[in-house]
Length: 392
Image (tube, rainbow, N blue to C red; front, side, top):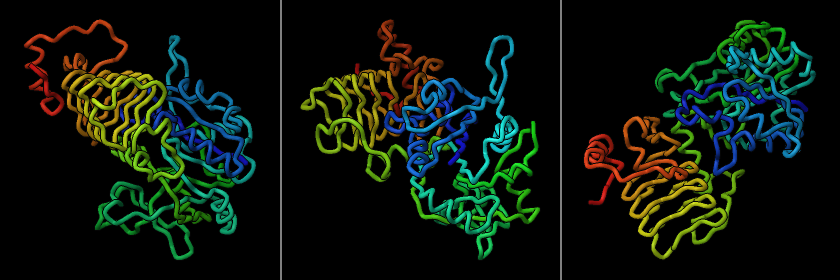
């Protein structure tokens, strides 16, 4: 069977991570989220997979290539162009990306599934296809119920007693929401769907195609299913996903590495004297990372490979990406460190280099770091008092 993974978006709501990593490549304990989707598709017999790419396309293509090592076949549809020798991404919208592939060659010739490339999903796709066909649907949307206080974060789906979709509400207030069923970004289509998608235009599944199907009163159904769905569309979502994985709440993700003490997992060759490090799980530490004496790590926390956590530093409920050096006395609480950026769990971030704080948090491969001046220390205390406890 055939499937499509939507992977062309810029991921603006997960910036600054997506400045250099496309959303489908964002790691869940060192494994790209799209890899979990491939495993799910393969499990349910979907082995011919199209992926539309645009923003940082080469990152996705170079990792997954033709899919052989994942037991599937993958081909890519690039959306963009080359100008003056530079590759320019220009996404066509989710439906427009589907249409481009179908116009090139009629690939989608039977019931097919479409997945957004930015979610962890543990869905019985076989059962979903069965329900879709029983309804005689041209299109089906997998829905999931959430608590009323969560509806304002999602697209709400309104359907009748038979499941036929009647309307959508985009992030309504709790009082205005007409349903507690949300759009999970998982769709099932028949090839006839392409009769309703224009060629060569930017066209979105949610914003353009679905309202058109409702307006034309076509057989378009919501399929409510009970399954695990972890969205990473925004920084707070990613934060929650990592926490849930470390706490063992996500079935399809095992914590990698070796459990060296209860709740503390490490990759290969982590350098630490555990008798002189104060550590409380759940914590994952990537391979070839150094944890110096006197450091404190409080979980849930993830520290990527090839990092250095210096003497006296505190990592508390934080996510540290690979090749990060956390300096002496630095205190990170509810933070995500990614390259030159320090990000709060709600998405607020600042550029460490622009703020002259890269001597506190920097790339572990740098060899040009010098002791900061008194003026730099004073500036650091003004700009980031919640980050820093600098010893005299």
